[in-house]
Length: 102
Image (cartoon, rainbow, N blue to C red):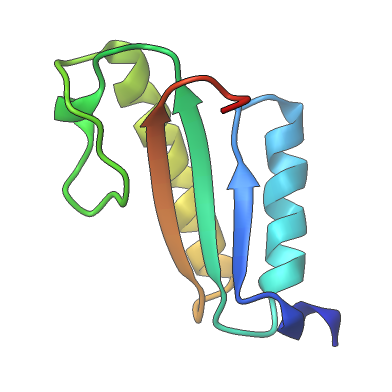
């Protein structure tokens, strides 16, 4: 089966209508196995570090940021959905600072 070829699946998350389609596609690609699914969201702000929990893979230093806090909540909701759908999968959240094209 095709899904067994994917041990790692990267899901770019911008919270548009395309995010749900991307998550569904990732679930489809990883459904059979214990894949690692990475949810990636890029923040343009310079201050996101203090709102990110310790279990998040990528941490950027800085102060509080309401936008980052809200994005983290939404990413954690997607993580929960994926983990409930594919219990064998490992979902990691990457909230990084920078430009999307980088």
